[in-house]
Image 1 (cartoon, rainbow over the protein chains, first blue to last red):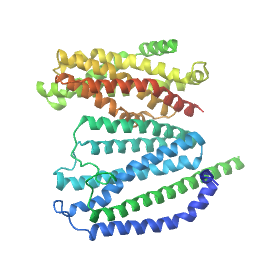
Image 2 (spheres, chains in turn cyan, purple):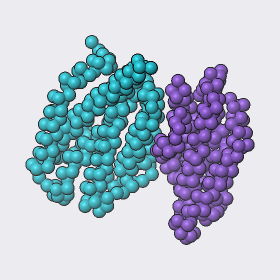
Image 3 (cartoon, chains in turn green, red):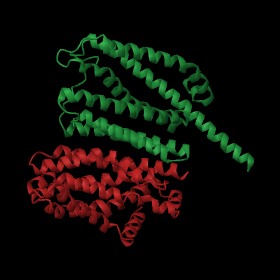
Image 4 (tube, rainbow over the protein chains, first blue to last red):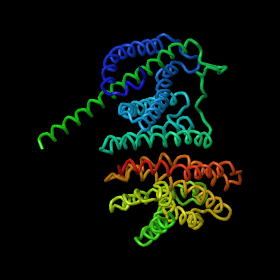
Amino acid sequence: MSLWEYANPRRFMAVSGRVLPWLGWLTGLTLAIGLIWGFFFTPDDYRQGSTVKIIYLHVPAAMIAINAWGMMLVASLVWLIRRHHVSALAARAAAPVGLTMTAIALATGAIWGQPMWGTWWVWDPRLTSFLILCLFYLGYIALWNAIEDTDTAADLTSILCLVGSVFAALSRYAVNFWNQGLHQGASLSMDAKENVSNVFYIPLLFAIAGFILLFLTLVLLRTRTEIRSRRLVALKLRERMAHA
Amino acid sequence: MIRLFLRDLSLSIRAGGGFGLALAFFLIIVTLVPFSIGPEPLLLAQIAPGVLWLGALLACLLSLDRLFALDFEDGTLDLLVTAPLPLEGVVAAKSLAHWVTTGLPLTLAAPVFGVLLGLEGDAAIWLVTSLALGTPALSFIGGFGAALTVGLKRGGLLLSLLVLPLYVPTLIFGAEAAARGMAGLNAATPLALLSGITLASLALLPFASAAALRANLK
């Protein structure tokens, strides 16, 4: 019994079909706990007032936005090395979710930044690199949609994902080099001296867990859709062959 | 490989649009900027390195979609894939030819265009240095983008969407090096990083481009 057995589409469909409803309920529950606790049962920050509560959307979305690209990178590598179709389709399924999360992080950041920094947008390294990440997602999705043959598309997008990862990391450091920032540093690290206080921290952990589960649910769901749509294409093709 | 390089070079010169078109495009951008920003000499001199870098980037992008497309259409690319020369070498030769017809003339002409924007003396030297070190990376990254989109009918817009984000680090370090040099600051760090990107692109990207071409021609 190894992990690779789930690379078989049929087995993947069977297992994911059974897991998905549970995962969905768990996602809803965790998200509800995190967000309701965060929004209604935490005190206002003494300087930021109630605007601090946007952290429960902003931070998890930003984390997923970055890690979704990481997951796509791993899935692309698996496709290029072991040629499992489920892996390529999972990478394809994750991209729009990652793009949405990037957009959520940028939008919530702007909404928070307007009252706190006095501006919707600054060319801060973190903000700028998120915008660039957004562009990478757009290019990746556009390439998937532009190519008809799915295997070729999977090959090309995987290569783009690998090269893009290198350049995305490079851009992150280039942008750091280019301009000083307004965004605060990391305040959730395990080893940092100053972290967010526990009152905000624990509901935030729930929100993060909820977003991770949400990401998993959406990716599983979308991967299943992709597999079904490919089966449909194959069936249609076979039918046309039979009639011809 | 050298012969392929020379072939691409002579093709782009004879077919027109090699040296001339990129330079003319560059000139148009430099002419249009004062119209849109205003003719203040101080302001223009301040944004000149950025404008010239952006112009180089767009001029480079403009000719990218023809890098492999013409050879793909008439079947030359199929022959090149089966040729004894590794595909990586083919990509490198073609990217290099692209640089010689776009990046190199732009670099050499940059001081002249700089004068139009109020850049003189030392500033031009910094601009030329940064462009000379950075534009090869533009051609090689562009070659990768062109290899990804070679099979597509209307790949032009997609090509820009794919390639421009990849240009971000090169643009940042290039423009930063030029701006720092002009302001009399130490420009060694961005220049070193810029050369690093160029060298890494020269060494590694042909492999990615060749892989993309193989997937496209399968």
